[in-house]
Length: 150
Image (cartoon, rainbow, N blue to C red; front, side, top):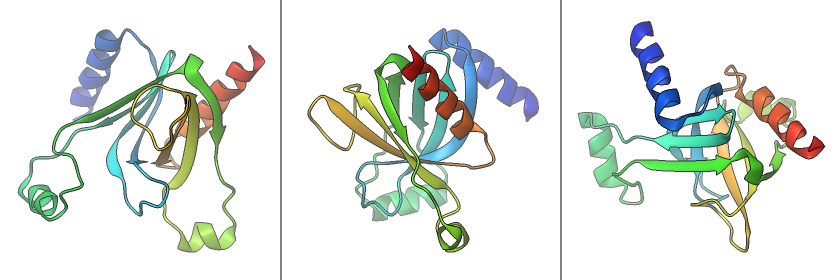
């Protein structure tokens, strides 16, 4: 299994020409008030932030997909070039939010127009959640700080 994962990430880097800095499982939310999003991979590279949703074809997920017509059956990919990232917002989570709220914290990336998003007018907000044990948030915050310094 570890060899398959290493092969996947090696192929990813060859295909994109980008070096993976951090990665996590997470969700992309099409609207701010969505209670659940599309599950997929969050990948921060040396050149971009990416979300990749690949629908599963097992019998259980296909049963739920038939019941929920709002879910796309095709892959969803979002690529935000690092240069287009304007800000990263991570809402503070108090004690009760950490205790009783969702395990995966949400964050918003505001970027210059780069694809599918929640809002319009030149700047778009992309709402994601992430696995807090992955380290992707720290890497994103470092990347955002580097962009501000430029």
